[in-house]
Image (spheres, rainbow, N blue to C red):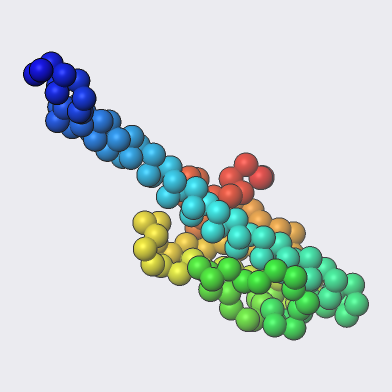
Length: 153
């Protein structure tokens, strides 16, 4: 009769072993999931910045100057909620003898990751009229585990 009772239930030792294995798997998998979620959020910001770039090209083809405000562009993608985007667009190129920056030849806009529960803290993604560069001021370039553009050079 004793052997029948032992075979019907799960022993405590087996339960402890299963819980230990699941805990070890969680310790390995959770950082990868966090990286994937943050990389997805950064990719959303990049998609929005690429949409700004496309809208800027349309605006420039009609007005022969780049737009100075994101709100004046016809965007098809909503701004991601985890990033702050300034409404103003900064000239990125200097022209003329005065050396002043102008929106006639270039622009840049920077998305800033709002620091929150992310273990990566605040970081930036900067786009120019020519696109993204890993050599620029974007601090996401320093975080290869979450940089959605790390292979695009």
